[in-house]
Image (cartoon, rainbow over all chains, first blue to last red):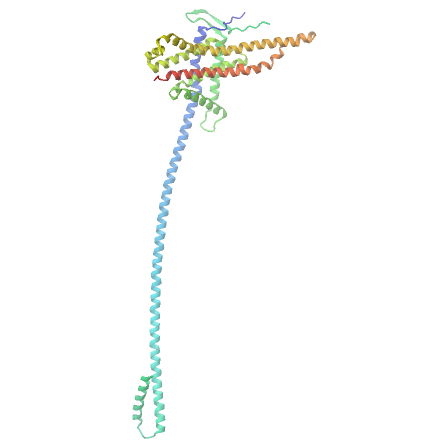
Length: 168
Length: 254
């Protein structure tokens, strides 16, 4: 017959052994389950924190780049405006210059034309004067021969033509 | 048909006496306790092998889940300052649970020995008392027994002592009743089986009636309650009470 314990009893030796077992088990669980897992979790947390830090850093850099870019854009726009307004100013000046030049040339052309016309007119008047003088002398010579000398006649005719010229 | 529900077997008794402890024996309770400890420790080591920070395996996910659950259980019920109780409560729960469930593989649960639960309950009782003294001071702890009036002191002492006794006996009773009922059912099914197949005439009936056919299947259904459910519940209740009592002890009285 094998020895057995009583069914309901407290055996001091088992009692003490169980307390020791529980404490040992506590150490074992702490050592083999919680320590490695907690270390790993801490490492993961560290990694996640590092990722977040990196991301924040990248964000800051990106914002700095963006600000710089915007600054550059602003400057470029200003420069473009400046160039445009300069170009407009230059164009206005040039067109004014062109117009003035054209006006001047037109005036010169007009003046020259007027002087030409006056000269032509004088020339024509002189020619007509000569012709009419000759014709009058001829006609008068034929009508009243010898009555008057040619010199007197010429003087009279010139006076007459001068009057005619002034009247025309 | 005789049914014998006995205590843990004693394998070896050392031939000397130690004062107070009495005879040192190697008995079933201790041996199975060691097996339970080995199972838990090996499980921990296997679970925490090859831990990785990312891209974790299912095994690691399970280990993390267990750790998270233990953390949430203790911190959720006791508060952040009791973090150092996590390994203790986990060890208590794991040992209790595996001890209860180990009866499924035919070993005798260490928890069907009252010494084991008594030891746990006493450890918990010491922790509760320590916490009470820490919170209120030794004078406050003693004064607490005289509340609300001095006459109540004996009852207060009784109720204080009832805590570990009830904890131990509750756990023990549930596990023992499972063993007793399982033993009864196996015995009853064997008798029923033998009576049923004994109806077959001749040598065939004699032979078949020796084999307890009905013992296959039916006890499995009952084992769902008496082993699995009770095993989980008692482990959980024991840890829950531990946590609650210690947390209550830490509450300062207004």
